Image (cartoon, rainbow, N blue to C red; front, side):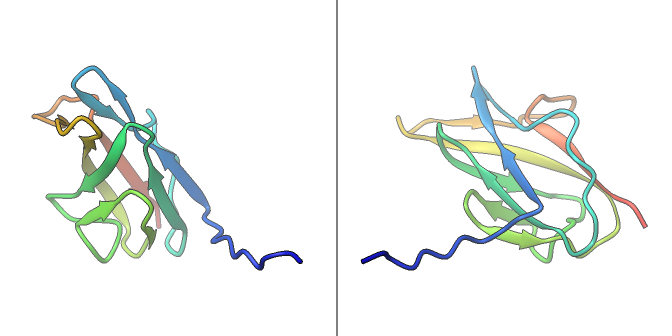
Length: 107
């Protein structure tokens, strides 16, 4: 007997990795289109992606594993954090930072 397993398809799977005290997204980020579905992941803990000056999504904070849909056109700078398994938090401090990346959504 086989189990029915549903997989959610996303146009973009974004992996956030820990490098020292940084939570590093891919550089450069892919180009996103309105309607694209995006999921962030991290093996080093729970990733958190924050947008403080506008967001390509409906929300300004995205947690690892969430699937979000691109809704807004523009360039949006994210700040990445990882709540590590050892209880520490690493990530964005100030720009320029390898823990931040631009999300470009063209017209």
